[in-house]
Length: 275
Ligand code: C2E
Ligand code: CA
Ligand code: CA
Ligand code: CA
Image (cartoon, rainbow, N blue to C red):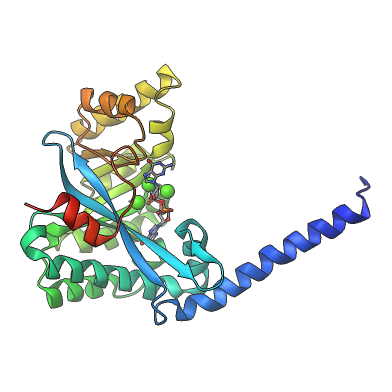
């Protein structure tokens, strides 16, 4: 075996301990994060290219931890899925979004909020019933809601997922396939799903300037989606060049830092819904 110096081993275990204790702390603190009001939602505008209007936004959860500061959902969603807290947190996000839609219904009546749904949430019993109840309680039309489910999730438990998703679409909720292109979908399976939008993963958008291949891939995804009757949105759009490319190839919507970072609801209302 390779010899490592004593200090290195020490550093390594220290580092590991630190990571582990952070994880354990997060696992514990997740339980009370909602009641302590440490969670909030930001909204990232989605721009419709034909009208150049912000007609939708994706809801993205944030956790302001009292000790560690802002924690990315990339870190804590996975933990919440493991502890089961995702069900409660996911429910809260839906409630919160519906509350916003109701409070600002004058400005938001033609606006769509896209909500990320975790597989654990989707497979929880009564998910679609709960969803429906929240919509009814707030008097929200299903037109105002879209859900995003990652491509890789859709590929697992196919039969069950098709049923779950059909329960939602039968109520009028639209479904977008998130991170498209990263999950090795079988196209024949994709065709069986009741989806209405494809969200091109940001890795492809990111690579647009670097290779002809990625241009071809993005163009092909857009054309294929349109031929199948789906809308297409590109995520992670950061440059004017990317935007122009997507516009020239008839992508329906874009989302990304080029246009706006995720922002608070008040700012969304002030900046984009103020007519
Ligand atoms: P996602 O659904 O793919 O969300 C897109 C992520 O890309 C977001 O990160 C967003 O802030 C970031 N992003 C947006 N525009 C750009 C850009 O131009 N460039 C780059 N490099 N990044 C951009 P965020 O907010 O950290 O979320 C990370 C992931 O956490 C999300 O990926 C999603 O899988 C998950 N997540 C976030 N909110 C929720 C939620 O409410 N529920 C569930 N189940 N998962 C969530
Ligand atoms: Ca998403
Ligand atoms: Ca995505
Ligand atoms: Ca992602």
